[in-house]
Length: 408
View 1 (cartoon, rainbow, N blue to C red):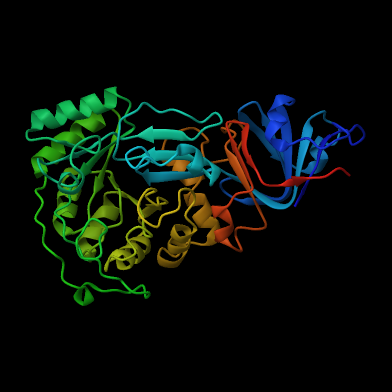
View 2 (tube, rainbow, N blue to C red):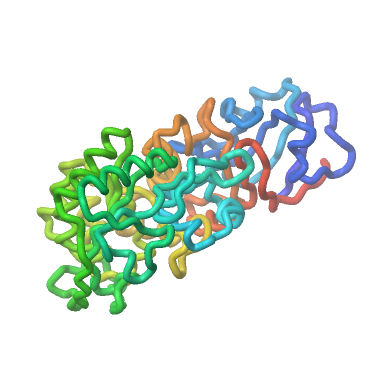
């Protein structure tokens, strides 16, 4: 891949010697990026140019539109420019995953759901991070038996405690409230002692599932969860829940919880999935993390067929999950949820940004944060390319450049 920097009047070279792209921001606040393909979060444009000024996207246009402008130019050749990806389910801080590693592998925005509480930070040359803070759970409920309390969980025993906890989390910067409704023991779950492979085919029915191992972790009561939801909604926050089987799922549905942090591990009855769709529950899929669960593919297939809103989330920090874009999760969304490759890209960018309610995040539309990546070739033909981006820019600042540069 060849990369050239020049002034757009087509006559004057920016320099006579090669200039490392990593130092590009030192001499240009505004620049354009020209590539064979540009995905703006919604659609693919061919032979297009992206104009970046400071930390924002200004516009996408044809190369001819910039011929007589004085912007420096980055030529990527046969490459694809995309918005930085958005990870909706990670445990970055609790697992001590280096943020810079995640950023360098294509995730420019991440939601940390279960770990230390922080106000939102980053996004200007660093990973943009939003947190939920610790998971609200029953005394000795999940995840306390395996991980303790520390910064991962807060047990609450009364509705008053539950409401106070929600208020404290929001005051500390939580963008979402997370609760656990996990009794434990589901076959194949990462948190279960029993790990049973679901196999490769996507039509695993409940009657063929291996028996779960009952762990009987305590659950929050319906009234407690309703108090959490009521308080969170009053403060303008949604509530996400870790669920995996029918009991916790029904509590979540009856309490009006907004989001499932996972597609459930155990195959749920159609009635529960249908109720979730009717209530417009959002589902962060995390299929790769739960790929050993006997019911995960069945749940995702049926949810998609019923019209559920499914979102990209790979649960960075779990075993075997890349610390960046997870192409296997993208492939599972295409395979199990029936998405096209274009829909998969939309789900991990513009759709996720709109869900986070950050204007234009996850797009390359005018005014969007200048968070973008580029890969050699066409990711619509091979989603695997996305795991190793050749260019990463956060807030207009170049973080990674794997393109080479030559003069013309």
